[in-house]
Length: 131
Image 1 (tube, one colour):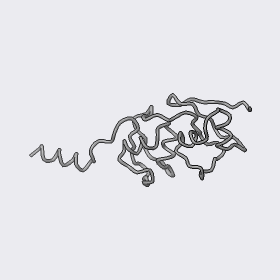
Image 2: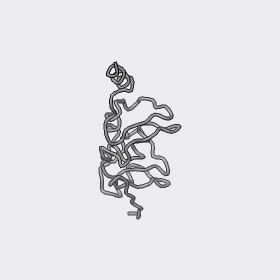
Image 3: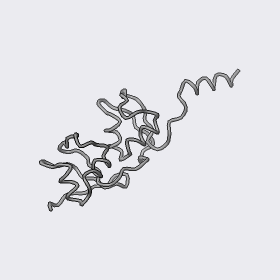
Image 4: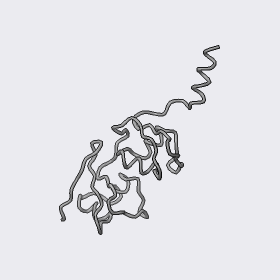
């Protein structure tokens, strides 16, 4: 068994994929079922491992350490969930989104609590209470 550096973020252990790594090899190195590795990282058997990819070896959390995330260029819900160590399903639920929804640069995603009412409703409530 090759020695491998283990990191921790959001109280979850993860490794960084090396050259010639595979999901199977990582699972084997940590005595974890392949299906568990895929589940922990919101992946399917058809996904390809990329050098430098963050691979969680424990189940991700329902909440991140940070309260929110501002979407940057080329980010997806999946990449943001990996970045913050939050389950993709939790990220989607908190922000009332589906896993395949497209994001726009500058979108704000909530990582610790559910998104409040849509802004248009908030503005309407403020408007009607003033008159």
